[in-house]
Amino acid sequence: MLVLSRKLEESIMIGDEIEIKVIAVHGETVKLGITAPRSIPVHRKEVYVEIEKENIRAAAMGATVDRIDLLEHIFKEDRKL
Image (tube, rainbow, N blue to C red; front, side, top):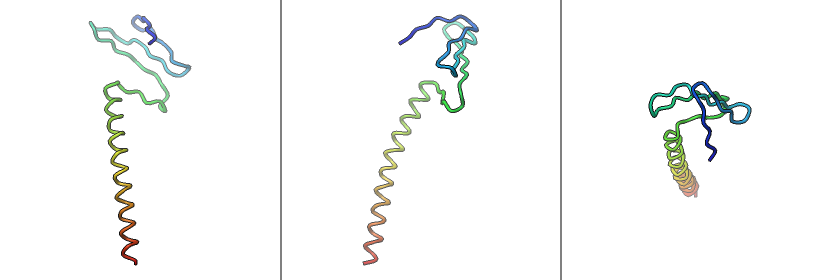
């Protein structure tokens, strides 16, 4: 992990397009401003973790839906016979 020290109003750059700037410091709370292209999602980590959990759950449900679709197709074919 790279650790950098920045003062109020100072920034760091990630590549050519992402800037993270210290906006305010209040006690133990630091406010950061992030400038990034819209194509790059930016989330707080706790939100990111929840999104990942939901994506995993949705993928698992998708597999279930695929199986149901397959069974439905099989039963429709069976009725034709």
